[in-house]
Image 1 (cartoon, rainbow, N blue to C red):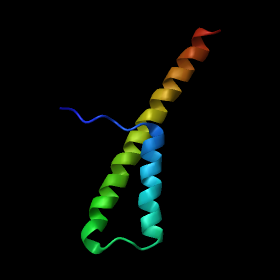
Image 2 (image 1 turned 90 degrees about the vertical axis):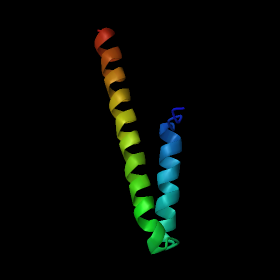
Image 3 (image 1 turned 60 degrees about the vertical axis):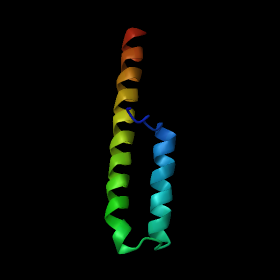
Image 4 (image 1 turned 90 degrees about the horizontal axis):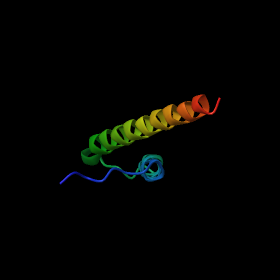
Length: 65
């Protein structure tokens, strides 16, 4: 079964939570690599969503002329 993708807001909130743990130095060395990988995945999701939104807005603006 395919995992449901996070919304942009959910992804940003998870990135912020990871960054907060970094700031508070709550990671041990055993979880550091996994958290960096997860943050990278979330950033990729956010970038994709932003590109898609930009394309949709551009299309709407183009079609409204």
